[in-house]
Length: 243
Ligand code: GLP
Image 1 (cartoon, rainbow, N blue to C red):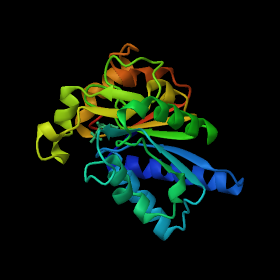
Image 2 (image 1 turned 90 degrees about the vertical axis):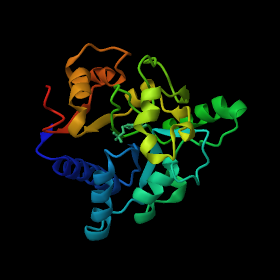
Image 3 (image 1 turned 90 degrees about the horizontal axis):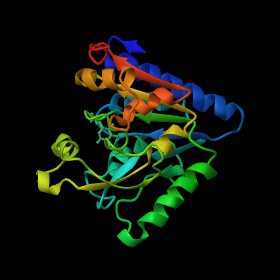
């Protein structure tokens, strides 16, 4: 779906999420959302906050699972995705804190495998993710699944590419402070979501074209979404320029 501006795209996705939350509420069901960080979904979160404040959209029945978190990084750190999600969304809506899930960047290393398995189990116990929001890295990564990640991968500790660390440098004082690792849902975790919406704006045109029209390959993790039964790329005209 190509929109004239990022604003219009974000607005349409916020409306889809609101409709889903309300439909689940009407059936007394939980709505399980997979959420992403980065600059791309910021406008979407602004619209959701606006809908909460002005249109009475309640998040009481919403359960969230975030894609990823830097490792090692304590959740109170300004750059943590835990902090990002609270500042940009959770602090402004009526979500139950017990329903918020993010991988923990402070898990002791020898316990990470167990905690990653628990994260996967928590997703399954919640009934699976109804709608997963994704951004895309310039190298085609989704979550922190860098090129070469297995399609079978589940939540795990991953090593970040240098280009990813440089892309995310803006949030840190210098490159040496950007964590070298992260905990990320795997491609298979993402592919198990019932529906996936990937957002991309502006300068992402080359990687959007490779993901949508290129060969399906683990070298471009987002290209694997071509095999998802219900996935939409919501992009603006600039991001669609090379399609
Ligand atoms: C980060 C995140 C991804 C995000 C991507 C793009 O590394 N782990 O989830 O989609 O990079 O970021 P941005 O939206 O700022 O371009």
